[in-house]
Length: 181
Image (tube, rainbow, N blue to C red; front, top):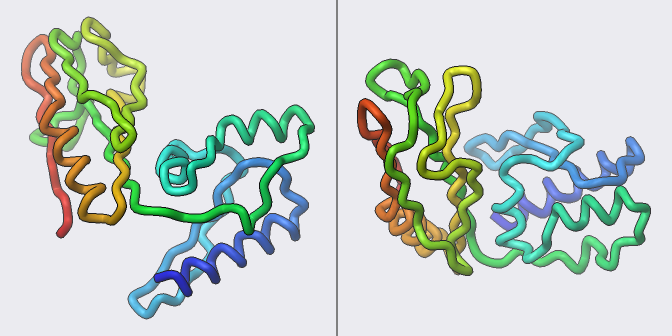
């Protein structure tokens, strides 16, 4: 809820001030069923989930990180940052759920990606013909969706997942869609 989110944000800002942190970073908390939160960790780098934050704030965090590194003064204050809507990230992996999620290695013989829009973003470094190797992370991409509320963000996620087609040399790579209502 907004009250808990506000309190967590205030704690994150105090922590960053206390250690004189001046860049893009992430402070993580765990929240219990009574909405009491506990500090987990601070990551002094851009997290892979940053597109979720970019969708709900409208702020390009990579750009801001470069500005800070270039010693530029930022043109925004904490009070300028407004959260709007919902965003969800799904990671697409070439893994075999029938074999304890070991990487499904081989060449991507067919790869059809969902069309990106103002509500659908795909961050990926593979293309049709790419090799999924046992020596690297088998992540095919991160699919990030945005909506005015959770239901709409989930609807875009479901639509985008339905428009993915991935086939490998020996087998199809299957998605597991486990979306909570």
